[in-house]
Length: 154
Image (tube, rainbow, N blue to C red; front, top):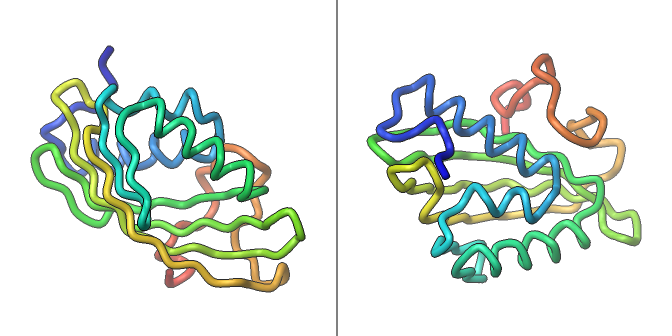
């Protein structure tokens, strides 16, 4: 299985890869999202470590069962060869209705077939009032005309 765009990345293919990742995560389908990673993928997400697609899928299932009405924006930060650095923010609420915004950075490394081999993610989050939310599109893919992170100064 191949997952274009393939490395080595240029600016346009890196931007496209980031948007495809954002779209996948906004779909919140753990099994489908896990297919973007190598079978032996290795992750660090905050202080958690996942090894392989099965652990990634289980992690994402737990995540999206807790983080409700999840909306994410990713933005390319840097790229070279088979690596991409991304910054992102997402908003969600818990089952008590408390809203949060998380800010993070990811470092990605891809195999030749375009599947992600390594994902290292650092995330900070803070509670926000519902009135302070910025991501207001219907659940699913962010519309092309919705502002990105730079617009919000995130």
